[in-house]
Amino acid sequence: MSHPLPFAGLDPATVLDALYQAGLPADGRLLQLNSYENRVWQAHLDDGRVVVAKFYRPGRWTDAQIAEEHAFACELAEAELPVVPPLVLQPLADQGPLTLSPATPTLAHFHAADGSLFRLSVSERRVGRAPELENPEVLARLGRLLGRLHAVGTRGRFLHRRTLDPQTLGHLPRQRLLDSGRVDPEIDHAWVRTSAEALALVDAVWARHAPARQLRLHGDCHPGNVLWREEGAWAGPNLVDLDDCGTGPAVQDLWMLLPGERGAVSAAQDPLLNGYREFMPLDEQELLLIEPLRTLRMIHHSAWIAERWEDPAFPVAFPWFDSPSYWSQQANELREQIERLQDLP
Image 1 (tube, rainbow, N blue to C red):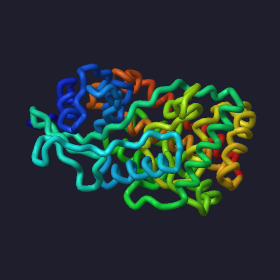
Image 2 (image 1 turned 90 degrees about the horizontal axis):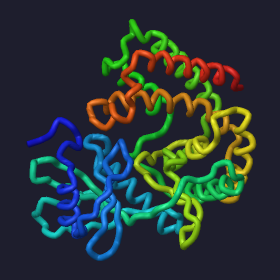
Image 3 (image 1 turned 45 degrees about the vertical axis):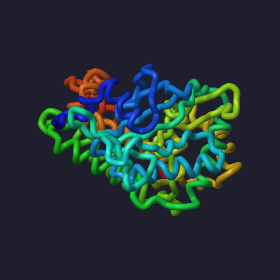
Image 4 (image 1 turned 90 degrees about the vertical axis):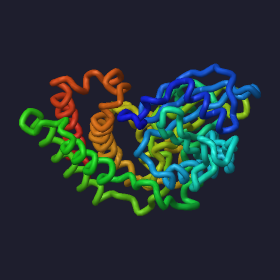
């Protein structure tokens, strides 16, 4: 049978079975890691290794898009960047419940015993702590890492991954949100109006300052996707989760590492950008896209939650989303963004 909920059939026994069928038998020790978009499990294997199994949310990416994500991770690892590429999987049987995707041998299709179909990849585990973004040297090292990543990103292009721009991050999510019925134009009219006004300003700023250079990016480089290691071969910042990699302006990977308060931005911006420029040039005009990108992320985030509300993990994680005050608060925050956007040249 097929389940109406995306991960309803994914229990520990299914995870262990999938790993076994992938040629990676585990000793039974599993830990589910924090991840709302996909389901991610840490597993101890019989051979002593510890791996992370990622089960992709059904319907979000095509196999071709996931294959590009994996290829980019492997390309970065081959360039000696601190990322963790997916493993090449070796199914136990050609016609068993687990088969390799035609797009890449790092992605498998697993038919669970209850009829559920999951796609999964597996990588070696890498651990670390959150980076200290108040430390200028930490910011400089993060800048160097992103400069190196973007230098690799310029060597090729994505054919299937999305482009990160006002259309894909703003207009389309807003329309999906309105179509979903989660927003009532009569009740939440302030959000409907302010989101439209904010996107019009984003479009205008983007038209004036959009960079000529578009490159392959991490795409979602917030502090939670950076692991800091104190020692060993990968000491320093390590990047994880290329699930949102795409094509866009370089500043997309930089701005989320900066504080949101205007007064604190310049102090953090200089070491981050100075480190970045050791490996890649950066057009100063791109910095004018920070507030547009912040606005797009706010709208995109609301749509992201709404589209996954039937997933039981989301009401638990975001209980305030279904409250009457949510859209009023979002409208107020968008008004603040409108003021920031109006101040831009």
